[in-house]
Image (tube, rainbow, N blue to C red):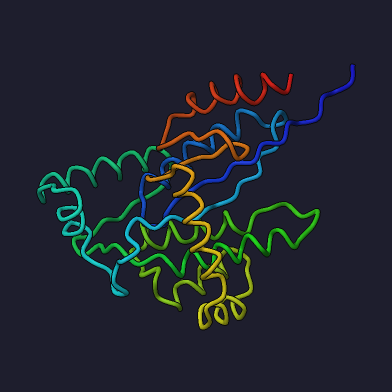
Length: 230
């Protein structure tokens, strides 16, 4: 009996490095990828979204930011962060939220992620991995190590950790390269109904919003992707 070829599925993950639920959503999605191993070939692309595009260069205290943006008390903020940390821990990721943990400007991080996508696209026949590796390096730097991911030295180190050329990353950060790409993509996703993150776009037409449980994605994929492919 002839074995069927895996079904190709492109997933555009619209997210921000500053968003803990974007990380948690991605960690949950790993179970989806594992579940369909050999059945679906996933092509993952990370898309930019800034939770606060007006964030100052040196960032703001996270507790103060949450209180101002969402009207939560310091106690509520601490409880929310503890819930996030415990959820991430259960998924194998260590959060470190110190008293001085800060939200950062993420525009330059998105510029490097757009470059990483271009690097992957240029490597025909190679497994796409640099962009996802960079995204995870940025998540670790921000949430696990409390580093300033708006600092060019930190961004260059993250690029190196992802297997990218550090000198090239440095040159990009010292220029305006990929700035227009990031702005255009952000506008595109806003125009297409993405007003919160994470948002997982399947094959460019089906959006699954939020950090959903794996079973939610599986129901959509079984019905809308594998059902139509069968």
